[in-house]
Length: 355
Image (cartoon, rainbow, N blue to C red; front, side, top):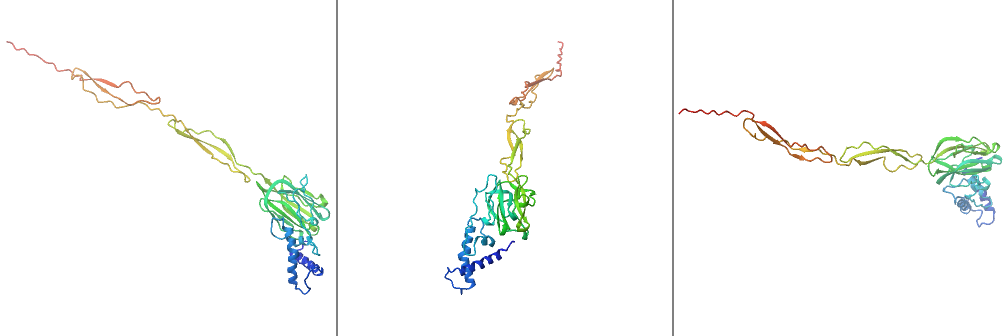
């Protein structure tokens, strides 16, 4: 049965107050008010016990009163709650058996839990199996659950179960601790163990290398257990592909540029992103371009060598720029001639006068 925290606290206070007043070891008179007795009881017994219980816990909230009642007897005898230390996990990865009689805690190893087992009547003794998946603090404890109130607890996103605790008669009340995976991503597909108890083997381990993220219990005293497993995907870092071919140079000469590209396989599951660029460029065809010879225009025709009966006249041209780097050579004809004044000269007739 899952007794509420308030009801169990009142039960513990009433029994402890009764023993406190009847012990004869205090200096208080029976005429003290109930409120004053409550204050003394809290100061002398409850708060020191709470400090002992929570000294090794990552959270500041008080354990349920059911835990206090199991730890504190009615005659003011308190028992130190020592949480099992790492190192009690056997070679097969199983924790030691835990139940409400021996603190109710499983070990904690900073690793995900991927299996659960129980034995004895009503699955009173429990154990967890640790896998290799590393987790990172802080761990967060779920609420207490039992078959009466829905009977389950679920870790948050990207978290796995890392520890368990039970309390109450025959480990009727349970809760789990969850931590985020240290790397990668924890997600589906989701598989279930199926309901199991000490009657049908009492041991289940996640299939497909999964890890537990949700626990369920049912039946009397949470005798039957079921859990859900998710899949852990390790981080995949980005990887660059091979460089492609260089594209055609932008110029045939005189220093052009060309580029090439490379692809990448994108990072997954919180892997590292690629560094660097996906495109690079370089100079190309850096040799100087060839230039052809450049000539000045032809000059005007010079005067004809004769005024009639045919003559010759010339014109010339000069080189403006010599060729470079194998360019077209200059022409060799730097002058031209042509005939001119082709008309006949006039004939002179001499007349002789008789004497």
